[in-house]
Image 1 (cartoon, rainbow, N blue to C red):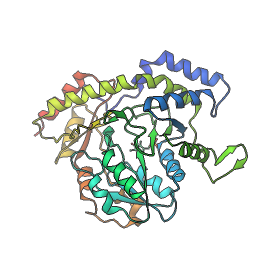
Image 2 (tube, helix red, strand yellow):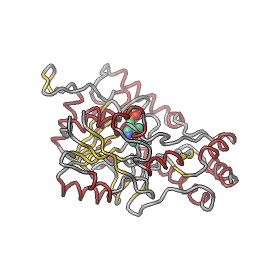
Image 3 (cartoon, rainbow, N blue to C red):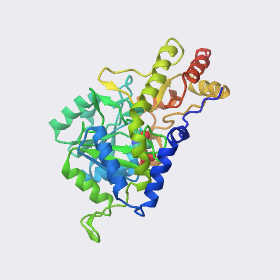
Image 4 (cartoon, rainbow, N blue to C red):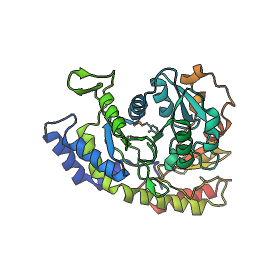
Length: 365
Ligand SMILES: *Cc1c(COP(=O)(O)O)cnc(C)c1O
């Protein structure tokens, strides 16, 4: 049996007539920037996430950068980020000329540890930027309480958390803003790069929109030095077709995750910890093993594709050598990079495939 890590084409196959029709409609309209398709998806995504505003953008990294710019982050500022995240979270901060200040995760939930944030804050801290890693929401209540007390903003990286819930509410409106990626491999994916921001703050929404469009509201009148990062109508049309399926697709992911949980109990791998306040979108299903590389090789030999999220933490990347963090600076993030393995999961994976993955892991000593 072959088990691919994630088969993104299956979502297209499932919805082919509707998707073909929507993309054809976008092409036929003769309107290839902004327009009705984009407005329709923005409205639907705002409704889905329970927020007042959704703004479509070019990709998830731009969404982070533009949201930080809209919050006034610039040179000399500091932004609290997780020590364990995809590098985009950090890149957005340094693209604004600010400094990422890493905070270690809770070793159980793998999300930024709220207890460690305050000691990392200084008078220069402008924003706390939690990531809902692997689809599990971060502990928003203590983070929001701290931010309110210290007068800083909260921007959430929701790139892996479409449809995830914190205390019953979908990710989207807890902090000041949430950034999204609609990269093809995300839970809600376009047919190329796409992203967005959701917020309940009208002023912030307006600034995000302006910055993303060359810093301009009126054509050829530029208020600020903006960027060009807009959601393409073709992608918006496709995303609007996929959005109504997101909850059903996430439920299928949860079924696979539940199966893994039950059947990997008592094997050599450590499982992700659940939290009663959080309902994961199960973007990824991470397990941890001291013999991770051998386990990955064993699974590969059995036709099972796995990935590592992420093999090198941002502070150890050559790109961030100038920040001056040596080995051992963030031991929890470093240990995760050495032991994490993401098992196949997705809405089009079968329980038979999950059973096969569990069987191979159970046989690995
Ligand atoms: C995918 C991802 C991003 C970046 O999104 P792109 O659309 O690829 O730019 C940012 N943060 C996290 C946590 C991600 O997983």
